[in-house]
Figure 1: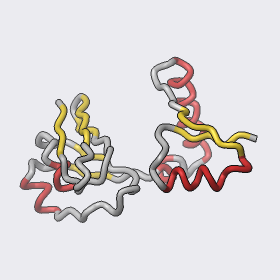
Figure 2: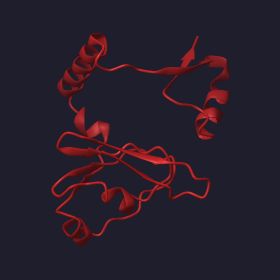
Figure 3: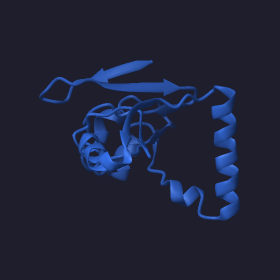
Figure 4: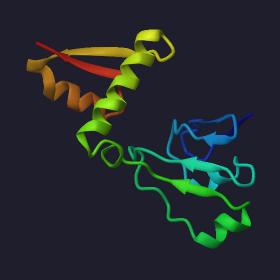
Length: 136
């Protein structure tokens, strides 16, 4: 299922991807979390990350019940890897799926380390996509 909301003045489209039992929300443009909750079926989870478009709107708990007993979460990597053994396990699992080809990492731009300021400006201007690499 795919839903699109056009909630920006510049008509940039927001794409929502739904996978399996949970709704995975991929934020492509500035949106408000209340719009994204409409993509979820009852008892599903929404995962938010990043805030390049600004802070996420607050959600009233009663709204989650009204929209179908929804579960919001905002994971932070450091909570999952705070112990050295957890970090090693997560890193090993990641490298295994990357090596298998199941996950592909898109490196779409390279900057020389001496041009790190230019890389930062490009990131801030949202002129990049995928991964950005600084090279020596």
